[in-house]
Length: 358
Image 1 (tube, rainbow, N blue to C red):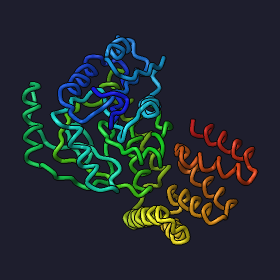
Image 2: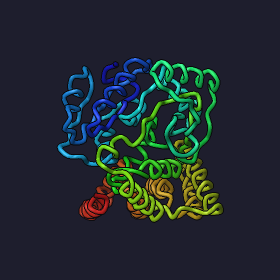
Image 3: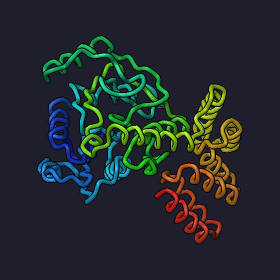
Image 4: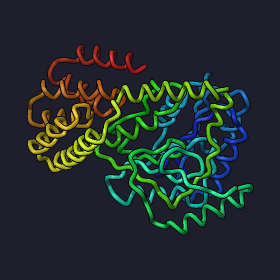
């Protein structure tokens, strides 16, 4: 395991299920060659998980006295993470040889890639692959080697990734912030995060040459969230997701994709100090998708650079109403408020969105 200067932080949240957590952590030690640091969040466990975490040399351990749910627990871990990447990993997974190096290679294949996920035996969507019965660790590791060899260097574009194992670039976290805690105990917070990343111009990839074994829903089962309770949880969080994003038809999906591309162009122009052209790109993006938080935030930056500070302040407010988790936009709002004498207004606004967020 590496020191605090590691290139990646692996964030694991656990609520009991020590047996699975131990297998996960042991597989990390056995199979990870890319430099990493462990950030472990004990979400109110009562089975010795905290003691186990604290026995792991070099790990950062966060103890919560009650189960805060996956999004809140994960956010606590992300805030304690450092490095070029943050890797969210469920405690009911077993990683395989060279897994993190493989995911990083996919992430570094294109500067626009923001999040990468592996393939697995248990997930929804395109990351699920058919597997033979894997009865022993040796069989699992051999199967993973076969997948790595057969699909070496093959990566598929994705419109969503499952949060059981997600490699996230630091730039993504800086721009969009943390998981939305309104999803409570969990489910659909990963879908939400992927939408927000794409709105900010980032691409998603599936590394088809990286196989991770996933037991699936162990924490939910331990909490008794199964059967009707599981169905109700999925339904409620899906409704929340659909209400938040107004899940688009095909035509609207094209408009959102166009908006994301325009945002990416605008961000490139900002880096070139071409603020007027950047502003035009962000305005075009908002015509395609008025709910694109990154376009509002980019508009604010461009207006600020062009000296239109009052309008920039309003753009930052609009961006934060859509995504209250973006620390960069919140910081920009605070800075510009100081320049135009709106410190009290900004403080009131930030308190309001934090209240709504929580």
